[in-house]
Image 1: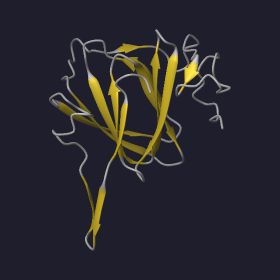
Image 2 (image 1 turned 90 degrees about the vertical axis):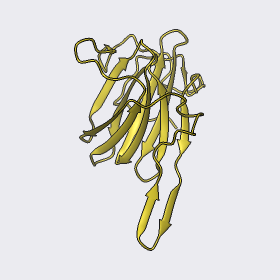
Image 3 (image 1 turned 180 degrees about the vertical axis):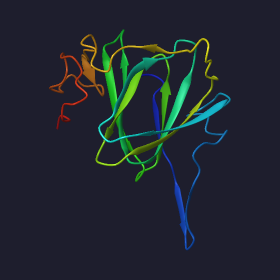
Image 4 (image 1 turned 30 degrees about the vertical axis):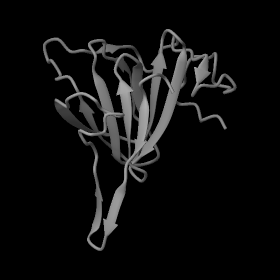
Length: 166
């Protein structure tokens, strides 16, 4: 994984009433060692791609997919490394994303994806901390994918629509 990206499985506590899961705790310093100042919720339709953007003023995002599934990707322009993480409501986890990486996601599967994310910087409407590039930007060409250069998608422009390599 690129430095600073973390994936933390979340524990689901079950009893005869249903389930309970902690989504974020202040003592999870491995995931979020800064103050949470804003929590956001988005719903994305099947097949939707929301990419690429980054934050250059120190924002960190912590994503939790509550329903559906997302392929979350991060790309580092300097190292040309791309990490992809599949996160789903059926298997709750927190994905910590340092904002300086280009990042985004694609809804996978045939249902809407419900995403809650926690951030350490307030969104500034007049001066947003967001730099964007198109989801199909041909200059996103990973040399490594998930730490390996054996993936057949390496050394080609990143294609969100291509089926995963196995």
